[in-house]
Length: 120
Image (cartoon, rainbow, N blue to C red; front, side, top):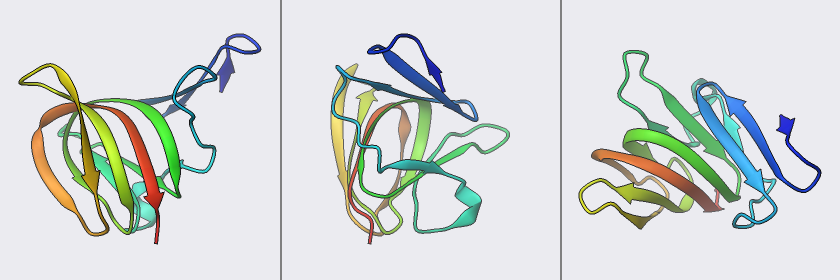
């Protein structure tokens, strides 16, 4: 983790995913964490259609600002909550709620944040 200034931005690199936290950003909870997708099926998962089949998984309740480009699928696992994404057709931010077991293929979208309110 690289701290840029005492009260400024902290950025963590997880694979090719940048996870940022900022005192001025929407209250990021320290409880939500990025997980290795191969270690469980109960995690919330975003998929990016690349030759490597990139997947980003998260566990536990909380909120986290994200910047994941070109996501085409999500799977809620045992989680409920919502994520914010940039709609490519209208160039507007939209919120997608999800419940336990929910999954969906979608057009390529950029994920801006994730909130998990229940992880059981």
